[in-house]
Length: 446
Image (cartoon, rainbow, N blue to C red):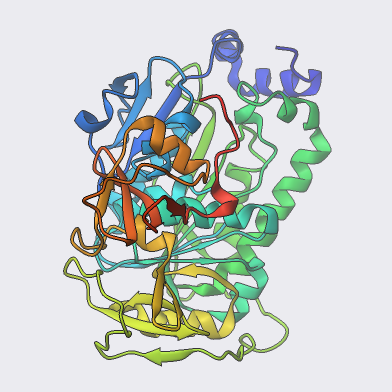
């Protein structure tokens, strides 16, 4: 691996005697790791299809793999049974368990593609609300897709600039997780492009942008709220120096010594993470303009235990409120209904709660989101258990033939190893595929 000369000089100075071990680690193969979805799967249910080895020490549901399989060709990946995530970033679990054990409103600020959001969704106490934001348009839909697959209804995905969120929701969040855009030094081993893009000026630019993002979002954090600050880079400018700036400028305090995960010390890539608490009298940066504009919509709200016509099948001990928008229905956990309305009125929402489906005349067309949800009743739809070949054909969005004759016409839930994959409409001679067009697998030879 040919590292930038300036990076070598800077990092040698910082690491001292550890440089040789660090450089050697960068020339080794990157470990492969996944994190199970505890509400859908366990190690036993995945061990037949994945080469699981030892556990990730700092993550309850994290596992290393002996080799990297084709995740695209595993139907259980598409069912949301696990997420492919770099092991070092799973250290977020330490902060979640230690510093916010009670239900909380949490913002994952720079959330795509969804590693930390799905992790938070699995770890947060029941009745917590996760708002996952991505400002880049091309990345927000993969974030929504991954959270839909994860199946937790206590989630809202938004697409807004941090400064807009800062104006719209002052004092709204108990916790902000900010995995900030950085110079990417910790990804050198996995991503050669990160090496080519690195420069000292890039480091300076990233450090400045990180401070600006934190300042923009700071007023949405409640007094005594917690900011989890992280990067995948090594230098002080983007890490310790920025923490010092946050403490001095925004009047925060460090919760503990920051954690540096280095590839020559742990089985993972480079990662930096720290927790800060917003002091009760913390400075709030001034913003021009009001607290955020009210958005107009044609939504119809049904907030008090009402059941939408012809809909059902969600529950699992969760009380829902229902919302219709041009015959499209969603279910929002009632405990989060006021927060949803507040977010909806001021920010751009991509997905929220559980999308139930669309009403067309007397027909109800179930949404894929419903199939992925952890609160879908087992008896809501007739189920068609398929083999791997048929499952992959379904995920390629092909029409399915040879529907078992004992299954009724109408909407069927496709399952693989008892895990839902999505819906088809059985018309007798074949089943029309309702898998989302934009999610379909494009690889034919699986």
